[in-house]
Every structure is written in C-alpha cells, then in structure tokens.
Length: 192
Image (cartoon, rainbow, N blue to C red; front, side):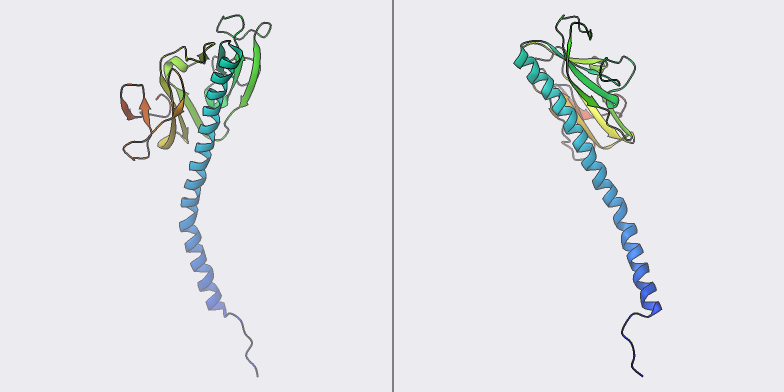
C-alpha cells in the first residue's frame, strides 16, 4: 500500500491553533492602525474645511462662517461639530445664517462612528473668517477623539491666520492644546 500525501489530523489541529494565536495577537494592533488612520482622515477633513472657509473669504472678499449643522441648510445651536457643519457667506454681516440673504457655499456631513470633535468655548457655535481671511476670534484648539479616548486623539490649532494640525511634543500619544502661549496636553475629549 502506498501512503497518501497530506496532513494528519494532529498536524492540522496544531496549525489551526497556531494560526488562531497569531490572528488574536494581530487583530488589536490592526484595529489601532485603522483607528489612527480614520482619525487622521477625519482631522484632515475638518482642517480642509477650515482652509476652504478661509480661502473662500479671501476669494470672495466677504466674511465666511463655518457653523455646526445637522441638516445642511441651517446652523445648529444644540448639535456638536462631529454631527456636521457648513460654510456660508455672511452677506448681511449678521453672524447668523439667513437663508434669504446669505449663501451656503459648502456642506460637510457628520463624522459618524464614535467620534467627538470639540473646540474651545469661542468656537462653540461657529468660526468666522473676515473678508481678508483672518479669524475673528482668538486662537484656540479643536480636539478629535475616537470613543472619547485622549490617547491617539488629534488636535487642530486654529490661529488668527492659518489653522494647522496640533502637535505632540512629549510623544505621549496625547496632542497638546495650543493657545499661542502654552503647550499642555489636552484635558479631555469634551473640552480642549
């Protein structure tokens, strides 16, 4: 009799067991990579919206306001930034969106998932760029977190002229709040 080539049941069980161990070790690391990539993409989207609003203010020589919006046609006083936002030309200089006189130039949908996007108190309702593309408020910070965890979060520093990504100078995986004077770790995902 010839012996057929192949695996014995014991060899197969050992191989499957080893594969299960390897996969169980790799999955948490893979999830971390996916979360980090997704946070970076969402932070880039919000930074892009800020740069868009600033560029439109300069291009149109009109104030542009970026406000929280869940509907895409009104600004929201009760929602949070992660639920969506829009940019509009403040043609009547009232700092409130009036669909009869102001022009909505772009709408961004919410971030989805378990993200929080929160800004300093001066950015609770809106961000206003004047006709020269200069921020009307003081400098501040936005924080983007996944699952309300500060480790691995992203921050966006908003200065008078140009927004930028926040930094982590001490490499503890928690971004720093940048108020133009101090650089300290963000305190939470709810308020930078």
